[in-house]
Image (cartoon, rainbow, N blue to C red):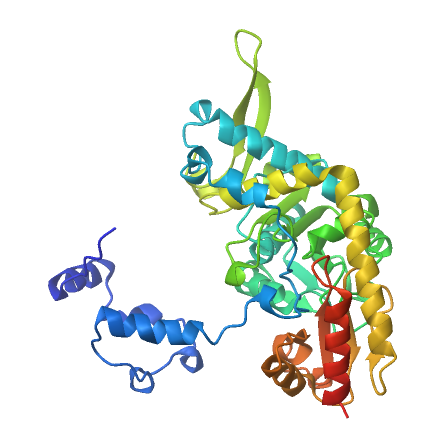
Length: 448
């Protein structure tokens, strides 16, 4: 696609049509603190292609690839091994070039893998129905909150303090205009008393398990308390591999499950694109955002697939649409489907056990270091430790030595003064005993 910039006359005509005096008016809803004055951006007006290439290459060389060093980052994005068969299959032209099936009757291949994807997600989450994917876990959570408001006809949403802060911010951005959104206190490594916050005006309670600090939550008491008040429980999962070992949210009473599927079939990819998983109870089907593929038979009795539900504004619903989602993460959910099919049920369980065992081994090593305390009492493959010094400088120092030691909690919760010494570490099947030894030795030296 060629870049054809607008002329000044084009801009004036567009501004006149929408009734805006200038371009700056279009940004009036953005807080001034978030706007960067042009005078601050120190960039040359023009530069040749070769010079730009060199400058960008120099910046890229400063990155440390996840596979090039012991890597313990998680907090919503996880480094798992993706079989080469996944990339090989999704790069077939019939998959790589296909888009959303606007003519579903002639997109049988796309509809079939979306149907299989939905089946896998429903089985993983323990729910009755799943849609054909959303953008990512955070926006799926926001859509779940809006859905709960439509179902209950209420506007109050309670977010657990253990919900990933980026997910919480997304919910506040998307759903706050439709109702009040409040967060319960942040309690690293333990459960807050979120049940006490539920009342007759609550539409939904949003709880992540394992939470952002790695803590596995028992959702049953929260679900019971929410249902007693007429509210819904939204369960959030950022590490979908955990569902290979933990009891699914649906079995614990969740009404809606919003999850990030990146861990299966999709690499870290510098933060995206990822794939949002969304599942719910059948009785709430009509309020589910996005699209749903179904199975049927044609006039000759042959099995076929159809776009069964598509309550979005691009189709028949218009202003009554449940969301403005324009498509689904097709290629990413295909990668998810292929990888999970290769694993199978037993393979996923075995992968989950490996993740948990490795995380437990590292936690034991770190707990033996002087001044280090493991805060997360029950975890899957991610846990939080408290260091005797602020975590952020230590992570930076270890990165200079080729060890990516995890995510400082202060990076996610900069306003929480009790998080400076907390470090969140994730362990997957890609980590080795040598990685553990390197991290332990480097951390021991850094905290002395």
